[in-house]
Image (cartoon, rainbow, N blue to C red):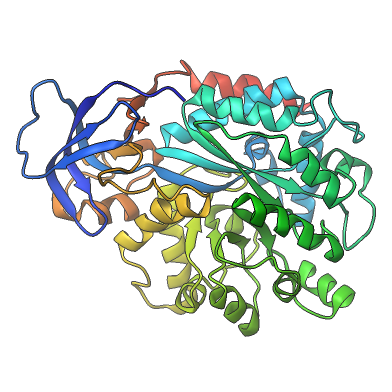
Length: 449
């Protein structure tokens, strides 16, 4: 990723982790990091770029399946379940090629930048050609995603996913063959050939306990441990998965992962919706993270995960947009609190500051980028500015800008996005992708079939 020469931004209001500070000058060095922060700067210094509104660290989307963006609208017709939704998803997955996936992901990541997202965790499992034959470059699909992120101006952690079975040791179904490397050892060999870049990190994922046989879970966990890489896993999203795991192994998915060394502080369980008390204690006690994806969980009628209990037990929380029913990390943050209010009939489970932390610093940490997600000296100069004068955000006092952003603003209120000190979104327009809506329409039409 290119970095800019030294420059200064003047932030009308800045969220500094615990409070909103008016008048902050932020210097960026030639490496795209924050070189200095100066508060009590009432007016912009000469030559500074002015960012009016509330500037927060760049948002981290900790769980994405980029091609699911092509399902938006289509899968909202009629009724159904997660399992009927999955049938639509498979049809789109069969139409992807490296070129069409690059075009689609570039547009999706540009939409993320417009929403203030500077870093995406891409849970990637469409590895091979339809039918399962590898491409000439076995990592052609993953490389397409890495290059798409660069073209859209954001960072990516490619969570290359082991997906070996249709369910607890059964062979992949025909539409799943392109997901599978056959064995976890073959998966590890392929993934090792992927190399990080300035804007890209390589991580690992276990699709689910359904999709990776129990005797191969440790292989994936060992690879992540040796690479010091983040490891993510879909966990207990559906009660049917829990029931099948109990039938196959006599224990819950969380207990199965624990038995095979998968849990730990570099591991994040995605969804963590249907958990027992023992599961929660295992996840919290090992500092295994939880990525909540509330807009997808409600769209698919998955249920409401025990986020407060998980956090109290010691599981750090992050947020993702998953199936991209919407791409709006502010809505994800708001929904996590509002879901808990509906469940408990009490308010105030997280402060706005805690929810912003989940969307920024904690999300970056879950993706293996601990030097991002904060406005402080030495951190990556990745930040986004939210308008405080839109029809949604006008009125509250500036000192309540964090509350305004979390509980009233939306992705449409993002005014600027800066990555590595470079403006990727300026005044609501993407600087690298000229017409994001047209790019989305064209790329989705190409894979819809």
